Image (cartoon, rainbow, N blue to C red; front, top):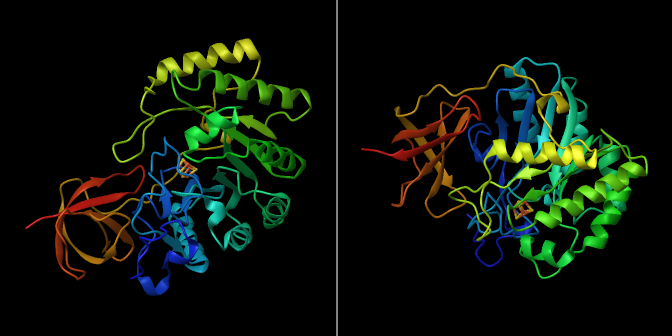
Length: 347
Ligand code: SF4
């Protein structure tokens, strides 16, 4: 296995997940295909990022080992997911635990997905800073429908601070927005609202989008999707920011919608999201089963195992586990919504 300690974010240090790796692409949160029992399949092809955001809920940039999925192998598993879901209007949402623009085969992946008849929409999340005229043209040509780009303030010093970098090229990002708006790709600007920290920043982003609307870029060509700041045990956190109750958050959005005459409350219907058959694993919480440990995961205490051929399981253990078959584990996370599997070794 490759030692990535020197530069965990370098593309050359990525562990490639392909057919020979044997890693199934259902079951992991950080890699592969994630189904939440709707027509949207979340696809996570890579785990590296060009930023180190203070609020990153997946702690991208801190992993000891990083992964990238070989394109044909990923497409094979996306097709498998679509067959299981029996749905004719699938959206593929590229939402990496990292920055998807660092994925070498991105254009080829989108082109291949475009040829699958059940896929009606291809969208992608990005921090936008690596976009330029050339790659926007390529993404448009490949068939990308929507880009969700994060922006938490209109002040570049504040953006740099939230994103954990010395310099944040806000001028470039604003040019990128213009280029996306001039292309066939829809643009969704997605600020995260850290209560008590970027209140002014979010308002400035609302005013910026309102201004764009007045220039003629209206829904759905341009959307604003303010996200409530949530913290997770394993994610990075902005020290003084507090989480907001969702009821309170939506009331605030409602108030701002009236004041600025702009759509801010977004729901599943706005993205044509509906319920579908779920791809769910044949285990329940607390079940004890045998798995095959095949490699180490992102963290020191994380392993990747195979369960029943099509499921990857995240096995957490402070003690070293041998890479071999027949390891008995107890499932501590198994859900119908999210098809994620986490387990711990047991005797
Ligand atoms: S929040 Fe997004 S852009 Fe920022 S470090 Fe995490 S994955 Fe990268």
